[in-house]
Length: 331
Image (tube, rainbow, N blue to C red; front, side):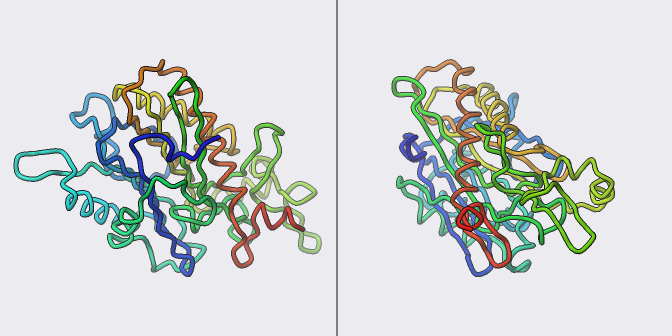
């Protein structure tokens, strides 16, 4: 594995408010990069995603924003656009350069302050902080307030975060992913098919919900009598958002296909995935001019998405009463 920022053409900046437990992550591609998107969850919060689809005019993006704050967090994109405009970066329209900044948000209002969210100032600062250094994984950026395993509410959930992973798939061809993991379901290590973070079993007197042991197993809870009742009132406070980055030369249609194939990695590492209670959204950024078969890029995109999800969970730290994979591993 290599740092995702070793892929040419991008810089990553993160701002983390660890008092109010929210933040944002920006992926800058100042020279422009072919963009794509695949949105599968039933509760998305996005901006400028339609223009990434085939049969639309604009092909290149100048940044991707990932943010907390629910729909309020989309305001951070204004700061990203301000920064890029000051750098004279954007689509020349004749009267102004208009930066293209597709964005996606996750819901983190239930962990810190529900009134403090990423704003334009935070988005601008993330751009100022963007570097080619490896981004921090865990409780940072868009993953600052991320949690997983929420079928039994926040009291039985666990802390998650943001993670990244990248690799060389062929001579000079790189594929990576950066993912903020705020899933309704459990995070699974595909190599062992075991839960590493998710809903915790509940045991209070005669009341026992979930499988014996630490993890309740969200899918098993869903088909129980308790789960069937809970699903009727389950909170729509979840989503997994992120981006696949490659230096391969892709068309806009191919970039969309890579985002679609990248979602397979999400399904491998999160169970269940793509529910009506999640807003799962994955972007693609293709920065390079190196020819590579799109099927190969997409296959390894799925691998890197799964690795980034595992990194997000394994690097997260406990917050308050919310344990993390690290904290329970130390017990």
